[in-house]
Amino acid sequence: MAYYRIIVLANYLQMNAYINAISYYLPEKVLTNEALVAEFPEWTVEKVASKVGVTKRHIAAEDETAADMGTKAAEKLFAEHQIDRSVVDFLLFCTQSPDYFLPTSACLIQEKLGLRTNIGALDFNLGCSGYVYGLSLAKGLIAGGIAQNILLITSETYSKHLHPRDKGNRTIFGDAAAATLVSTEGFAEIRNFSLGTDGRGAENLIVKKGAMRQADAKNDLFFDESGNPKSSDFLFMNGGEIFNFTSEAVPILVSEVLNKNELKQNEINLFVFHQANKYMMNYLRKLIDIDQEKFYIHLEKVGNTVSSTIPIALYEAGKEDKLNGNILLAGFGVGYSWGGVVLKI
Image 1 (tube, rainbow, N blue to C red):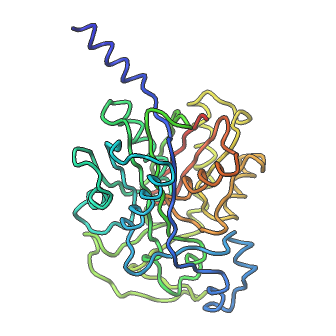
Image 2 (image 1 turned 135 degrees about the vertical axis):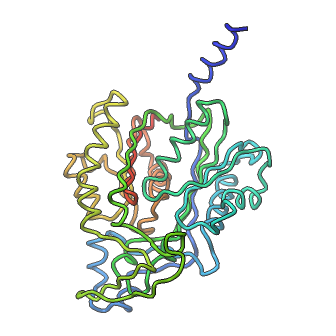
Image 3 (image 1 turned 30 degrees about the vertical axis):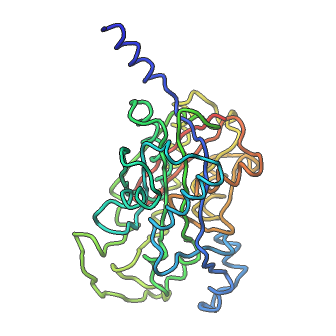
């Protein structure tokens, strides 16, 4: 009996996790640079496109929530890849704009999708590192023998956190949801992770209003010398500090991910980073000395979709037949939080 238990444990430990399929959903409403410039005539369409790298972004409808969008992304996944939803035995939902404090949005999505009731389901609150963290959780569930087919959904409606006069953040962020099936088989093996956290940076990207520390609106809006709105009732981002954090953390993250996977940088076929904005991504590429043809960018028509940027980029890179060999993923942002992993195709 003891020998049998050792064999079973060994089988669990050897069970690999794979990305099986990815799909994503974009809301119908589109916010173009032309529309933004009409609101902020001091900017030009060319300036926004050249600096941020975004020409349009999708915005959730007023009555459309992150759970709604996540449900639509999952339905696309099932239809596009002919997946029987009955195989799903765990649901992970990443968002920072949940429908309610309680119940868990993942429970709402389970019912909307008509998934089995004898499955696990939970939310986790992360931003731009959320997809990588979600893959780590899914891999852990498979390695532990807890689940074999995990539906990982990332969905965000940052537009609902933004002040209407916040032209900087409105040019960057778009709403979207992505659904990924992580299984014991698939097209991309999930290899080894490097994860990091530094809560000292929490104040530099934050929405203070709504939870228990600041449940009520402060109504403390003012405009700085550049005309940018400042209020604890809306999303605040200290762009300079976020840039400094990213510049310090991401090169180290890439090095750690390479070491943990016993790879050299020239053995990576494609780098897929969180799609923050064009300027930051190009800065990081040059800082880390990554060949341009190995550095994938896809944000022009969707913007920074927070936790969904990496799966959307993976989906589009796959359509371009660019997913081959070793793929290095890196997510980083609010928290501060960062994470990286190698996918083996």
